[in-house]
Length: 119
Image (cartoon, rainbow, N blue to C red; front, side, top):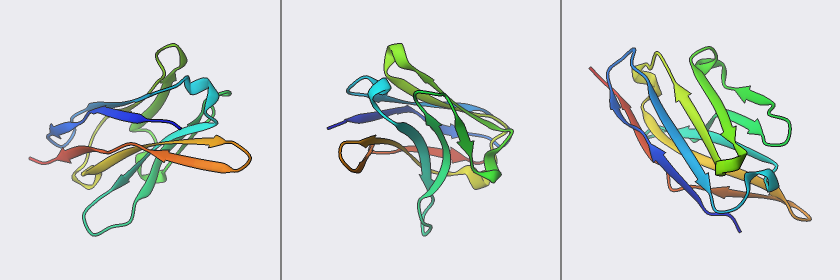
């Protein structure tokens, strides 16, 4: 079992920056992959960025490449997403996800944190 708690988020004007973080209830070194997904009203949840905890390998949605950066701090059991040059289209609820393998792949989700980009 893994509990995930997101923090950060809020409101910002276009072109601004925000940082959101996700803290896990256990060592993230024991998790295979962590990632951020987002969901805007009326839309499906979609991938933003992922990081493989053992290797640091990252993956980004095309829409955020060059603007967002995902990172992890194994010592603090925390994963973060630095978001720069935010656009109104980035407005969504952002969810943290952790994936483990325990005989089968299992996903855990956080409760979500709101990011609003508006002038």
